[in-house]
Length: 356
Image (tube, rainbow, N blue to C red; front, side, top):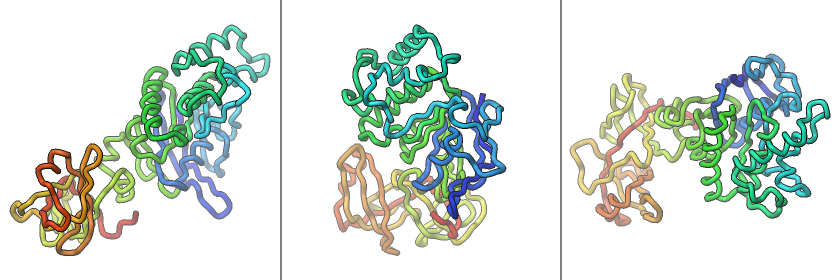
């Protein structure tokens, strides 16, 4: 009961939106399509939905059935957009029921079944008391839940979501993505979810496919792609990262005359770039042996759950960012202009010919 795309290419005039993309979503799985603007996420989703058709040579399979040239109306896919697309003159109940009521008479469910199905969905999206309201009387988060319920009402084989929370503020987005994960765990419908929000993708999905320039750069569980990025692009795209230019050695990297242990580094690939996330940098008042770099504090910001430090290397003048816990920040009490020493942990090295 999977959805599979094979060798999908899509060109618009001289622009290649998708370049030989293959991807399989297992039955009941929620997969996020993540990437920057122009990476091909929405184009791929629209081709899976049947709203666009791929160039010759591609295949789209729903549960093993080839639907490549079948239009969207016959694919039984539920689709929810970023801007809801609700009918303003219809109540919440009628918006959800719309896809069932417009079916040909021969395939239209009886009225009692339509009402029963809509009532069940209203309970599922926790909007039972608002069945008679109109979209203008709902909040943005409530409208998006109605849009998802309308997509589910037709009992689709696959649910396709194109940045469904993109028009909402940050707090509502967080609430709705938790709700979406709970909803998915209840109904187990095969789902593809387009987003450019890394935190959203990592929190909601079972697996994440990262797209770049029309190709799949990496696919894996949130833990796999965050802890073991396959390329500099993936490392840089998934949260903040610092770059330190140095020379790779067997099992370590030399930066400014200091050697740091490197994970999964067995062979020298000099020259190289060391990638280190801000929370993997330890800041000290005094050098701890030879494995520390001297740096100067530029500024600090302790607002929020963590404290952020902007530092510059004493040897090269290159800037980098460090994240400390509030307790570490209080103990250190860093002041602009002060000298400190840093240790790099969980270092990942890529060759110096990287491109982000």
